Length: 137
Image (cartoon, rainbow, N blue to C red; front, side, top):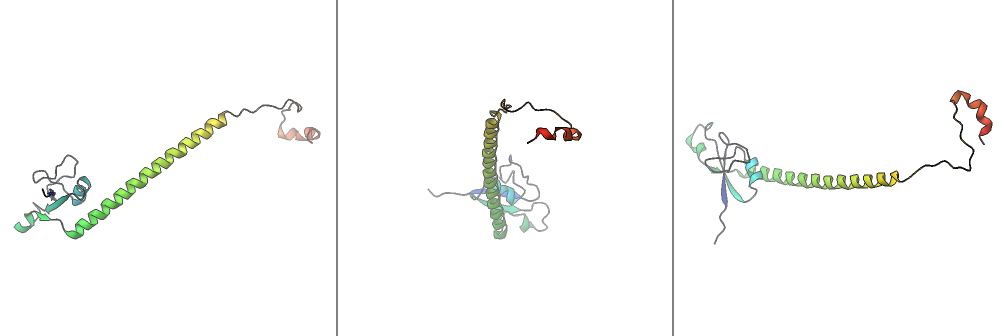
C-alpha cells in the first residue's frame, strides 16, 4: 500500500495561522511557515491568493515554490536547534541552581565561635584606636 502524503492548504488572503486551523481547503493556513511548523515535512503544500489575485490562474491551488520551501525548511531547522539549545541551557541552569543550593546548605552548617583561649575582645571606635594599639601584637 503506497504512502499518500497529506495535502496542506495555504491561502495568503483568507487563511489563519492558528493551531486550530486544519490546513484543509475550507480552513487553510495563512503562511507556509506556520503550516510547516504544524505539519513538518510530511505533506504537500498548496498555496494561492484567493482575493488579492488579479487573474484566475493565481486563484488556483499550486504547489509551494521551491525557494519558499527551502526558506521554510531552513527556518524550521533553526527553530529546532534553538529549542534544543534552550533545553540544554535550562538543564544547565537547573544543575547550577542545585549545586548552588547544595553549597548554601553546606555553608549553613558552619558555625563561628569565639576562641576561649584568646582575651575577650574590646569594642572600640576607630578614632579611639590610638589608646588600644598596645593591645595588638
